[in-house]
Amino acid sequence: MFARAALLRSTIPRFASTSPRFFSTTKPNMVKIVAVLYTAGKYGDAQPRLLGTVENKLGIADWLKQQGHEFIVTADKDSPDSEFRQHVKDAEIVITTPFHPAYLTAEVLESAKNLKCCITAGVGSDHVDLDVANKKNISVYEVTGSNVVSVAEHVVMTILVLVRNFVPANRQYLEGDWNVAEVARESYDLEGKVVGTLGSGRIGTRVLQRLKPFDCAKLTYYDYQRNDFLEKETGAVRVEDLKEFLSELDVLTINCPLYEGTKGLIDAEKISWMKKGAWIVNTARGAIVNAKDVKAALASGHLRGYGGDVTDQQPPPKDHPFYTMAASHSGGIPYQHGVGGNAMTPHISGTSIDAQIRYANGVKEILDNYFNGKPQTPANIIVEKGQYATKAYGQRK
Ligand code: NAD
Image (cartoon, rainbow, N blue to C red):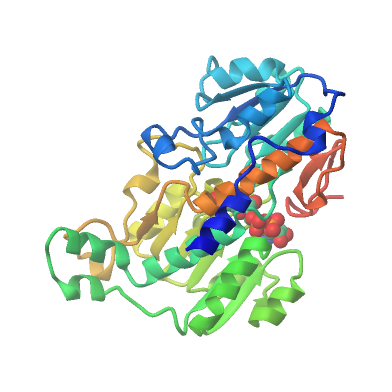
């Protein structure tokens, strides 16, 4: 217990740094920084390590204030007269999270006359129009790797929740009922199934590593980048043809970034290439799948289940297909208790408390590098100096 507490303390950002740089007499110029984070409300006080929130401000508010910077923090982001849209016009740095993203569209970037740097508190920078950022020489950094374990754990959990048919079983129990057959008729073992990851980077690799002890029939991956480490560690097989890859799978886990090459990639046609009764887990980005096609495939029984934590718009509109999608299991017998085949959550997989501590620390480090003219950690650079630095957003010349 003591060791765990000490470990947590050591990873929480220090608000009052005692480093010589902090007391430097050559103060950097004052910078306007706008952060768009989600609101914690009453949970912010009760859990001060909810760092990625408006209330707890990534733990960097005092540190920035003491250096004379202006730090605006808001959750109000989507309407044209939102606080974000007003402040972005003269901000130099924007920080946001994928959980409650400020969308830096071409139009917003055009209005942001002083913007030089966008920082993602987390992983995945598709909320920024990266091509426009490149044209305008705006750098985009993220805290690479900060929540990849958190997401991989959520993926494994969601696969099990779907395959074991946990959600309706739990609802049935909480409603005070006991009907084994109602749930068992669509509950399977993961052992012996074929599982493949679309995208075999940090998260895809960790998902398959965690699945290895489940004795799946086969682990596979589809990625334009070969992953020797993954193959050696897990025995995963690379499949180079998308149709061949999808048609073999019982479970598809999606772990690639969202960009023009993956937007709407998993649509009705690609789902039809999958086996009848397959499951899909998507914690990457909502827009990689066509939500209406997923809902239709669940209703027709072609998909047995879909789960994840991302939607094409966040927060999603109340009439989003994912709120009402459900599997038509076993010849259309409806579940008395809630929905089968729907394992959606709000965007939580990458924002566990442990992940928040890591990405808050990472944001502080990126800012510190920026203020002091130091190079950024290469893995954190998505675009810089008008170019893509990452190889993960498609094969580019
Ligand atoms: P990564 O950069 O380590 O790996 C991404 C992999 O996807 C790369 O190997 C890349 O080659 C591959 N890829 C790109 N386009 C592809 C395509 N068309 N087909 C197949 N593979 C393709 O990234 P990561 O850390 O593993 O994260 C992956 C994505 O997961 C992020 O971009 C982000 O969108 C998402 N993510 C979600 C959460 C969450 O909280 N839900 C948290 C972190 C990351």
